[in-house]
Image 1 (spheres, rainbow, N blue to C red):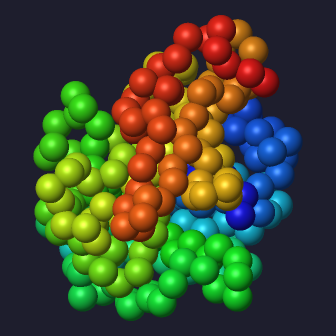
Image 2: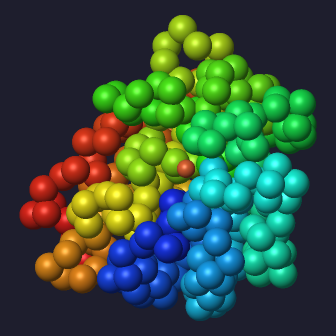
Length: 286
Ligand SMILES: [Fe+2]
């Protein structure tokens, strides 16, 4: 498996240099698939969806994506209440689905946006299909990966209100139904996290990977990021790439290795915080 996970592109309020550099990174890293976990637009305007759709088309490889809170209209409440996801679906219906199955992985997208929550998000555990059994299918790893815009866990220093509502309970429900990994965004900070000790075992069996924001102008340029996720010996390697303004390109930063212990709970090295993504430019490689 070799997935390039990006999030929170915010077309309409996106850094054009980062968009171009992101497109070049997709070409040079040649992932099997690109995953985009929401907030493709800044304000869900038709022109912004058109830009986002053109970007998806330009990648030339399969894309799987879900909406974020910014992809529902906010300025026009009638449209928000009556047709909240119409423009999103019109833009991407024929371009990218929210579900994919390939050798080695299955992706299942969930819509955590809520019309009644302008910023926050929630997951209905009853919407999660049972994806057991087993991480290993026919002798090969087969990861079950859920896509959520809102993160079930946030790194230290980020207000817990920005996380998915009842995040640990959501992870528990996902773990009980066989999900191994959550890919998410929303808080614009790359991180790799596991539910803390004392959480239900099923919650600790779900690895939470946040891609940060790849292009949003709200962030300083050096915080633009995406992650490359690949199989490694006993689990997954997660490499963050960060935008280096002087080089006009995304460069690889020190990343994480996530492995499963004897109880099938995830262990992350180094412990998943935002530390790796704020490494000094000297530690970045092209
Ligand atoms: Fe968001």
